[in-house]
Image (cartoon, rainbow, N blue to C red; front, side, top):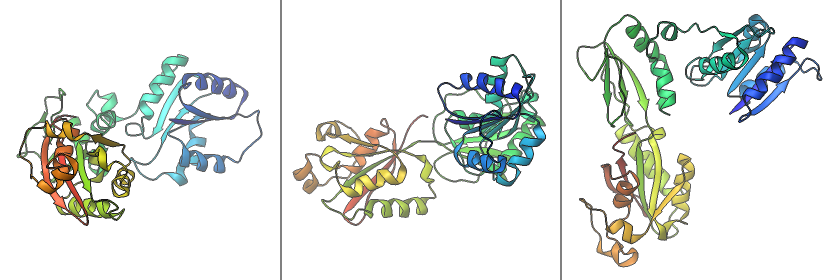
Length: 331
């Protein structure tokens, strides 16, 4: 986590020092009044590009004017927090839930004995906030514009639907119900982009394991191309991929490594003995077995990497490569 802090007065500089100590485990980049002056516009632009959280010690108006040209959207903006120089108030003003500004403000306020001024409706009414919950779960919010429908319904005490393709160990509020009918808005937790409700909020969990096989020296883009084709056909979101797996004999194939790079995940490798121990329905190839010691690589790898989840895409053949996808049973 990268934190930018800026102060404008002597008292502000003193508080700047204190706040830095709160974020010892983070990369902190602080700017003081007493150091060489940098243009605020330039500093803020840099902070918005690099930071996860930006802390202004000074007037809220200064912060609002400084950040205004760079605000983009709920899922892209960093957390922005304002503290007054006498350390009485800590106010999150941007990205309270998804960016974590509310949580950061509470953390700072507890450390410096100040009052956190939280204005988010769900927080002040002690209502479950779906966006904060999704961030804690590491779920991607596919359509942030629909958060407002969920939050508004909960604030009105109305039912909100919930459908999930994966098991979630969670006790939800009583008006969040596992229904697909008779509700105006709802939440879908799935690697697929589905619309079950008039206003559907799609949350994408890290729940897919991709098992792959590759001919020696297959084109480096062949697995990526095959995967993009499958994802488009089945309306699967790329973010859902958590693992790519293959047999250890194929761990250095460029097509396999390129797929890992594409998804930003590390490669998991299994031995033929590990793959042969899996029980289930798999397509079989005597030719593959004669070379690798197992009759199927991609399907067995997908299921084993998923923690023995459910296979959702059977062996699919591309240009010198094979691919299968399994859904993890629980996230």
